[in-house]
Length: 185
Length: 162
Image (cartoon, rainbow over all chains, first blue to last red; front, side, top):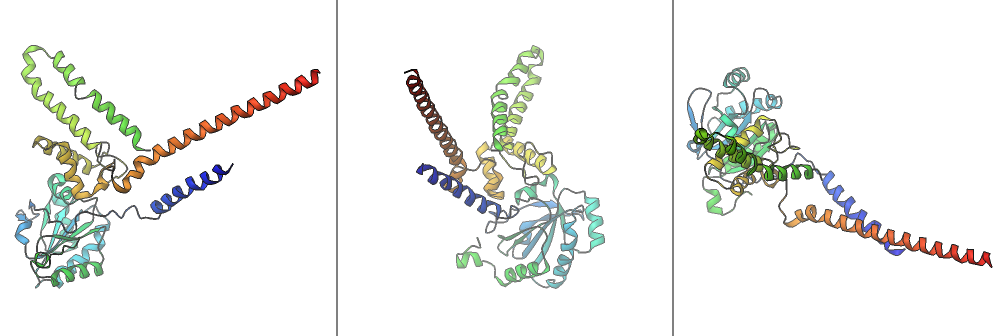
């Protein structure tokens, strides 16, 4: 019968096409709705016993890194942050750590061992992490001088990526989004 | 689809919880303790709503589980946040929108019925309809073939009788 000849490819082709589309994509690449979004404000206790407010860092390029002392992938990228802190010491740049599901003691010990003098805040109840749509550590957010989330990096950052992102954001002046009317969406 | 047992579970939970056992508790409670059980009643209702919302959200750390089913720390914090937001007077839709704004639509276990997502909703209907048509057509053909064979046999039998 002729309808059979049409029916089999008519069913098989869309299914194969759908599978080909779905299975060739990386399931770990999830498009974040956050780039272009205003950074979510938070006020949180630092490991040093102070209080830090993200709003106070407006006008600087802020790299917010979510990490934990139990996170293996965080070890490699940490050296890049230490280097960035040194490299951009005189620039409008601020490195900021958010400790994800960890104790302050472990986090303090890690910072002493691994180096770096930037502030790290605790995140009780993971409220900051949920606010930033964190899937797991490490995750890094690049916030521009206007306080907008410009990029989100899932997984460890490379030295190259960190430098490129920070350089490009430092090159932009405050208020660029408003004056040019474009948002890096 | 993998979601169907969960959907059924959610439906069962929804049917049973809001009216079901909190009411039974209230009836069972001695009269003197009514003032004590009241806040618990509200809590039970709140917990049911938390469960309802949490079972529609995907756990970001385990991905294959809902926020309700996941034992991970992150899911627990998310349930806490849902509870907090409901207490603050937000509607379930507002709570879900909060998570969608941060995680994207990925966080919803049931995709919204719009655009390309329609495929997920309509494909099963089409496949089911196609299957039904196939079964009906095949069955009809079998019946026709059977009748034809029976008729042929009867004819042959009659010929042999002669």
